[in-house]
Image 1: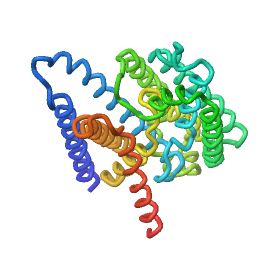
Image 2: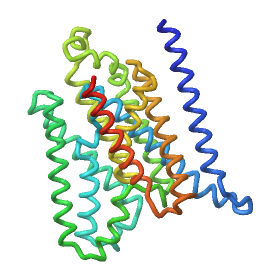
Image 3: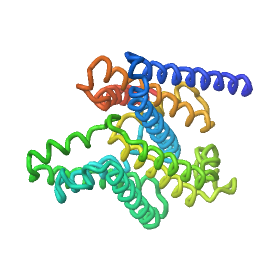
Length: 322
């Protein structure tokens, strides 16, 4: 019976891969003047790769985070990374101005985002794990408090900021796949690969960890160390995705739960692959609609936020009935 279920899941993965390839082909080739084909590809291929990288980061991080917390209606944005990203960009514009090198140079801004978010996550959550004796729920609560704190400071800065500076800041606080440079993408892929290699042993233990702490410890898992390393990996993946395109709060909730509903398995290899592939389809198709139908007038994050909010209410009502 498990063999039949496994074959069915493999077929679902194949179907999702085909959908991703189809969405990518449509995005690359829709309304392309063959006379300017090379120029069009130079613009669209980097965007496509960024969308796929973002979907993989958010999809895999969301599945791992939900398994750690043992709750399917939470997302890694509860750790405060989105709020920290908004605070960093607001502080840069407030202190140095929108014309400064930090604000204008994409590579430098990305490096600052990644270093500050990664360092903050590592220091804060390592300390919290130690002080709370590796209690994940306390860490989650602290992340929610930190998120509120970061948002409050960011709001205060925007209130006293020059209106012209605030106008220039707004664009960086909304998720966007425009004006991506390939240097950022390559660095992100290298960093992602490094995180996966470093955490490969912990990722292999995810199926055991979902059984609960007592069962995992009885099976020989160093539970506290594994959870701590996985959570830091989650924050780094979210930091990469957020630093690349900006905050997309509800995407992780949508794609992680769609993957769990589609595959109905405890095997994280299927869940992570499914979540990443569903995210790629949503982002690529959504960006195509933004570009071809709305002519860039509405960012993709608006559709994801509205759809994610409705889906979140659906999950809450479903869980309540269950």
